[in-house]
Image 1 (cartoon, rainbow, N blue to C red):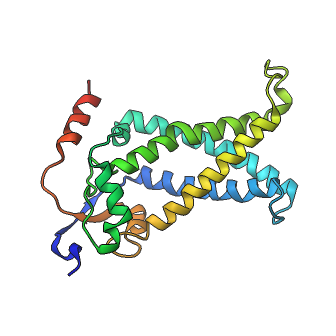
Image 2 (image 1 turned 120 degrees about the vertical axis):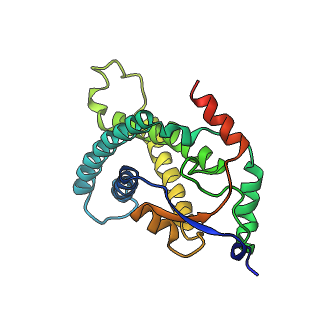
Amino acid sequence: MNANDTCKMVNIYLYSRYERFWHWLQSALIVILLATGFETNGVYALFGFKNAFDVHNFVGITWLIAFAFFVFWIFTTGEWRQYIPTTKKMLLVVRYYMYGIFRGEPHPVPKREDAKHNPLQRLVYLSLAAFLLPVQMLSGLLYWSYNSWSAWGLGWMSLKVVAGIHLAGGFAILSFLVVHLYMITTGHSLGAHTRAMICGWEEVEEREGIEEWEIKSRVKSRV
């Protein structure tokens, strides 16, 4: 018997309209940036260098502005608490994705409205939001404004280094995208996670209460 058959499923509202809008907007922007960015690096010819260059710059600025709104949103709504890292149950979650998920075992940390991300997701998403994406945006902005470096007192910087960092960041984001696309197929039914990001509601395994470590992290976050 599949282990999920013994778990009662409940339908809860997980993702607000803004979260869903931001998710799909950022997804579209990232795909466009990857497609045009790799073309400007000579990986292939699809839109033409000039068109790819212009679109990449415009979409990059759009992404930067949209990200600023997202940062404002998570801090004004308190959603930043969803990203507080923890090592509690981390090994159980890693074991689940490496082994248990293929045996139909229940998730050790099911989603809830006040804890949408498991410990591994918290670490990954925090790393993305606090490090990888800001570095990618900053390197892209510097790359775009290269002709102004001297006027800004940044003439000592190396364009080759900035370009290398930006390209490496692109590959890192592409790697995350590939893994993310795989992970959305691992719900209790094919397409369950995608439907949740469209309508906001998702079926999750019912559990009573919240974990002690989650209570502590929430209390600390309010101090």
